[in-house]
Image (cartoon, rainbow over all chains, first blue to last red; front, side, top):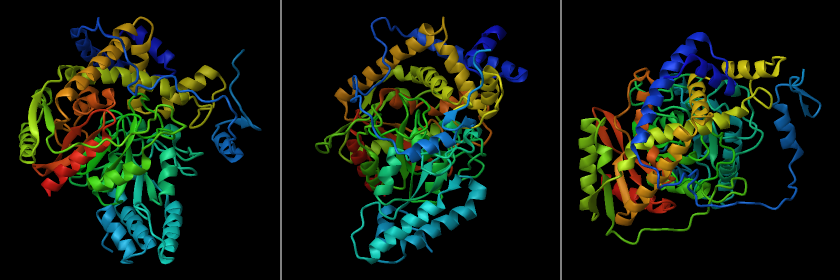
Length: 96
Length: 468
């Protein structure tokens, strides 16, 4: 069972504001899903290493070269910014 | 006009001038406009793009140039794939006004192949769901029974094909999101090996599992589209070039994993699928019972790894770079309020779960443990593929369920129980229609060894010919 404090801690890490009712609902739902995850403890994994991908590819690199990007793409990307000044993203003040 | 059902039929109609490409395109667009209110499979039409492309194809036909295998073929694209200059919402409010600044690699390929792109299809928000009830833009309905879900998350794409709103569509499959809706809608859906198709321009959900693939009415059409979209891409470093691997002959061995016919399966569905599988012995295949004991744990592994990757991938929706923003003056407030207002219930639930399994003190118990069991699942498939050439299973444990029926998230997650092991191991798999029970279509899943995508399609073709 997840505690109320844990729930608030996770929500803060995830940068999501939760309403009170949602917090209660999610606590119950996540707790039952986490209970379901417990079944993994039935398997012995002491002799196996973790994998995080399946392609068998290793260290895919590229030359450190400038690739020309069409300025129109750059402009289109910038156009999507909720708030900008000239060619810069405008962000809320970080240091008070 | 009578709209064609397959790519070869449409091609013949275009070449023999039964209809022009513009007429064909307008035929589909008007059918969509008429029926979309009811089914809700399309979010947006790319009408201008479609008509321009159709005009070009008609010029080519009238100048008597040969047309390629996909030229003039109307297709639909899941709305988590970028098409330059058009809205791409991923079914989320947070991207309601987002205009894609570039084409996904596969869109560039389809455009070059002369495909007529009709529009963007509805999906569970950020492809998170198994019923297409989680879209911020409304529920999609199954054309075979509008009280039932079409499956998900590529529900819009599956419905678009099943309702003849296009000849084929692209979807994405992270845990079954192409195969499960294909099964529920009575069509064919193919998830290629992880890496076979570039993911550049696909809005990421869980990057080690996501894969793009086609949905269509038959295997020939699936193969034609796969031939165009597959291949290594400089812009996706996880992509690979597939060699041509064909099966040697008909003395092939089919594995039937007993774990896929146990608890939770609909008994009528099981009977029907078993009957279809027995039919394979008449086709000259040797049928062998196999065991994949770790598949019981696949769903738990999947929901740990997938949500962990979701929590990282969706961190980009910060209200600063693009998408919806609350424009709060305080940075933290801006994050908290933007994400609370812009992200729907299921993405929020998965981000929370993923953040939890990665958080200090829990990472070993959940995330690292899941990655180890993932390794075991993969090893188990490798071992089995030494004994058999491919595996047959039902695609889903039940046919399409009713809209609103599965309110508890865990019961919804269970509908992917036969499809998620495939994504965890990165294998190619296809869902084929294999008849109906109580009027509802069901799917047969063929799973092949990694990168043997073409052999899976070859077996599928043998089954399809036999079935007709």
